[in-house]
Length: 248
Ligand SMILES: *Cc1c(COP(=O)(O)O)cnc(C)c1O
Image 1 (cartoon, rainbow, N blue to C red):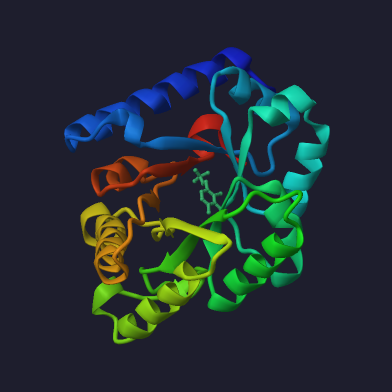
Image 2 (tube, rainbow, N blue to C red):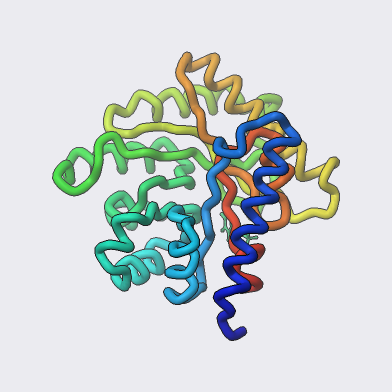
């Protein structure tokens, strides 16, 4: 598809308006929802255009692809970009990821968090301390999804074990646990499938805050097909690709 700059600007404005309306419907401040433009597979031309449109949070799901794009950014553009890792992180790429991303959304084990904690210690001159992370939680039960397995959220029989794992991560001194991330199933059944998934993540977050006695303010949930429902259920970060750029 040829790149249409004017159309991208229209899409940005339209998504921002839909975010505002969803926030207002649920009596929330629109400024409490951050839009991440998911740029995976898209070229620099489009990335530069969304930055110029005022969106400074960009999401990639692979370390390598983000690295290549970051290398192509001017220092001025890089200084105003916050790169987010939203895809699965392999342990052997943790060091590179910690150096590149403002926020890693996809931490899925205590082990991975411990590895990052050690890396932040070793790389104190190049990685900010503490390193902000989110835990990816699979509350839907779909087997294809990454993350801590917690189908049904707080009602899962592994709930207390999960709380123990989150506590262990929260206690790592060089890691800043900011909240949770999830991916809802692709489904037309919004009320039966999608909304309950977002609601379950929020419930997990609320219970964790009580048990750990600390805030976990970020909920990264909602993509092109379901970000309005996610906002109604408390999302603070929506990750939107297709609705901004068109199909990949
Ligand atoms: C690709 C991706 C998105 C964006 O998906 P769209 O449906 O294109 O908006 C969001 N989150 C994650 C984790 C992704 O991998």
